[in-house]
Length: 495
Image 1 (cartoon, rainbow, N blue to C red):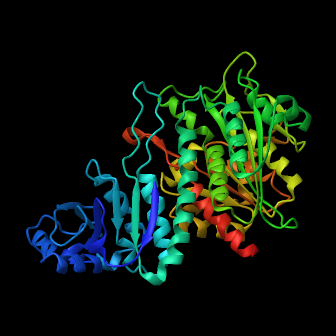
Image 2 (tube, rainbow, N blue to C red; image 1 turned 30 degrees about the vertical axis):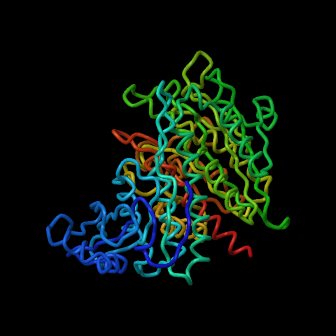
Image 3 (cartoon, rainbow, N blue to C red; image 1 turned 30 degrees about the horizontal axis):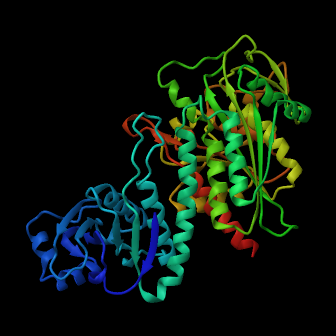
């Protein structure tokens, strides 16, 4: 899809569909007023008929509007003027794309002209681009008849002449994030018999080739040499060999300490011997969405050529029941030397992440962020809107929260108090892998914190945000926008 920035009179834009905004109480945006004046009050006549009230996300297509070069004019509702914000802009753009008539290949937006408090033209354009690409996503379904790509080919964004340079850069930013989200969604949506640990390793190698990253994909024997007994304990029940994927984006100064992203890559989670219920177990193919989001973020920063040093660490394997599988009551020895009593084999994500967090120490990181579909308890606590955020450093947590707000990929700061740690006490090992039902997402984070004491660390529990169930089942691409925005901010600080 091609995006371009143009300035000038909207009535002269030759396009299949020109989009203008209408607020509630039938109030016209500036471009809508201009089109209305040029077309002998064509929009006003439609509004007086009651066909369009300006309700947020409502749409109406007008054909053969007098004196307008566009083949169609689409009116899109923006809601109340006083309430209009970036979220409403994104909703209006998504509604527009979904309502496009069949055969429309080129469109032109005038929506970024509308003032939003504390939002620059660059921010509005980036959100528009990201939303258009996301709204035109087609699931990579494995069917005899392949799904057709969305027909939209060209998108024009109308801005003031003085805003052109900022807007063009914003197109790159929005497009980069959207491409990263698309990769994360593609990987999550693939079936688990295709998206194996080996497949994820191959995707990392492809990214490295495309963007010049340094890459290593460690096999089982190399993982054994590292002493990752906790990771290997989870992997031992599956015929699929485990992999430890390490990607490096080294575009910052040599002296700059890297940010490390650690992604949970359980390519299918049966629960192991502590077997999950059968209902909806197919969705456990999404248990590698932490890994997918890290790979998606690397695609985004590769597209943006971000001047920063970033490392990805992805431990990936299946969690399967078998004669060789991990059992409740087993004790594992982690790479850090801490022994772990396994009380529930379905609490496996933390068992692979803890060794990856120890491995991260060798990079002397400025910060480490792990991303994982870790606990159903986080979904109960927060629902499906924010990701859960835990951290041993308030400044790092604040950075991530602000990145979430800016990118509209929000997180919520959860407690990580010392009082919860005792729930992980074990009579037979240094630590148990679960802390009981109470505060399940918090004790999971407490477990990880034991292995992240040597650096500033944050944990994102994305169990409620990484995919959708039901009719719209599929990966969301989150938290690629949050992570990329966080890294963009770090890169700007490094300058």
